[in-house]
Each structure stands twice: as structure tokens, then as C-alpha cells.
Image: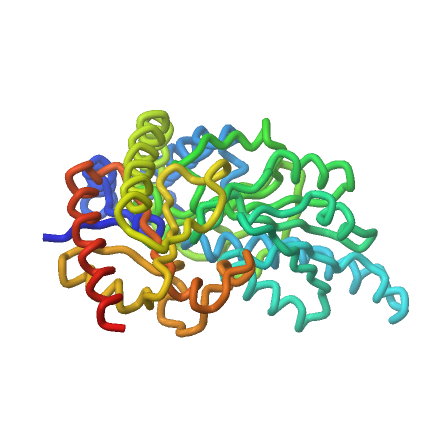
Length: 394
């Protein structure tokens, strides 16, 4: 039997989501770009799903663009804005010295997901200037440092809504307000936050937002990007005219329908979900602190996703701990699933000031709707045994 506590990495598809998808894997298999009946039916299904996604974050359905995943949404946001400004250099500026003074500056943080950090590295090679903001011991940015980093050349601020490893929620509304004052576009990677905290893009002032289906009980291989009406961005994929000429390629019809249903359920269940996973998390942390010595909670407890618990078990290599837990059927992680094969300490834990040993001893437990108190008790029992075993071996 498997006891799954890695919901930040992925979630299982809800039965209601799968049920909604099945007709579009069987009877309703038309290409949404086709003009005949089943094609038009497919197009209507996409429009319905687009509306459901939009309702979750309170935007217009035509501000939603479907992508293949959160990583693609992040790439589209950063490169779409960057290339739009780069095009303006080529069209409007002929003198090299003048071109260097054109808008080419992006601000992000040192704790972003690799989809953002690697995109930024790629853009640096193309002549863009990137500022990587520091964070404090809880993973929070300093708003004054952000303001100081903004300059005439700044085109985009991209700061994640909530961190995927330590769960810290950034001051999004204040960041958006600052960006608006400075006439800079603000993008947030909300892959971890969607379905785990209320998000209203209009009230928060967000210009662009990335989300991913498999974090909210939809299938893998589907994501979305919100772009506020009036913001122009370039496509970095060439091909057909899908998604208003912004995302070429035949739409993942069943995946889009599944994402729409998952967003609908997330909106309906948000209050229950937050209360449920926060209760499990708080109970877990309380018991760990009570029964296991020499541990450290990583990230803010005040500004934190409700289901995230990242704790370092000092003196233990988290890889060894994960393998011991796996023998008991317990699934957790040491951090981001996209970085789990690397031997180096997490860039997030390093950025918040942890030394190498403490960072390498971190265990991330993330709770979901399907977890129960009995499962948490099973986790706690085996975690204590595994920690004692590994510490006795040293």
C-alpha cells in the first residue's frame, strides 16, 4: 500500500475530472480547428473549459491561453514579453549605443522554479539583463530591494506566488502595486498556489500568471497562462493559429477539458481543502517537534501554503531517509521533483541561508485532499523509526 505525501510534485486525477475527460478520448475526438460537427463540438468544449479556468482566478475567459504545462507557461510569459521588446529594438533602434539603452531588464528571485531560472539564463545569453533578488531566512523578498532594482530598462518582474519547496507565499499584491506604479509588467508563477489559496487576479493586480493541471488533480501535460487584456507578447512556437496565434499546435482536447473540471472543483472546494490540509500539516509539524529531536522547520509559518511542511532532520541525508520511508510505502520528497536527481543542495534552501548539511537533510511533506489523519499517523510512526535508525548508523 502507498501512502502519498508529495502533492507538490503531482496529484492524482480526481474521478470527476477523469469522467469529464473520457468522452473526449472516445466519441468526441474531433480536431477543434475542423468545421464539421465533431470539430465544432471540440471547440465548444475548449471554450467551456477556458471559462472554468478563468472563473477560478476571476478573469475573462479570453485572457486564458492553454499550454502544455507550467514550465511552458513560464517560458511563454518571460520569452513572450522579452521578445516583444526585443522586436522593438530591431524595428526602432538602428544605432548600437542606443540599442543598449533600450528596455531589456527583467527582475526575478533566487528561489524561483527552474522553469523561470533557466529561461532567465537563456535570455541573458541573448542580451537581456537579469536581476536575481535575495530572500530572507523565511524565503520572503524585501520590497524595498525590489523597488531599488527597478530602473528605466525594466520590462518585467517575475516572482512566484508561493515557493514549491518551502511553501512561502510572497507579498503578491504589494509586488503588483509596485510594478504598476513603475509601469512594469508583473508575472507570477502560481503553479503551487492555484487551488491552495484564493487568487483573484483583478484584486491582486496580477498581469500574467502561470498554472499547471497536474498540481490540482487534472492530468499531466496541460497548463495555462493568464495574460491581462492589453498586454502584448510574442509567441516562441511557430505553426498554426491556435490560441489566438500565441500557441501553435493541435489542442490537447481531453487535457483541457480535465483542467477545466479540476479548476471548477478547486473553486467549489477551496475553503474545505485549505482547512483540511492545514489541519493535517499542523498536526504533523506538532508531532515531529514533540517526538523527534534536532529538527528545523524551513520557510515561513505565517506566510505559507496550507499543505506544505519542509523540515530538516539534522545529521541525516534526506536521500537515505526517503529510501527508508519508501520501504514502508511512504512517498515524500527532498524538494522540487524537477531537481530531485541532483546531488547539490537545493538552491532554495541555500538562498534562505541553510548550510549544506542542513539543506541536504530537508524532507518536504505536502498534503492533499485524499490524505487522512490515520495516514499522517502512519507517516509519523515510520518517520521516527527511520530517523532513529539512520542516526544510530552514524
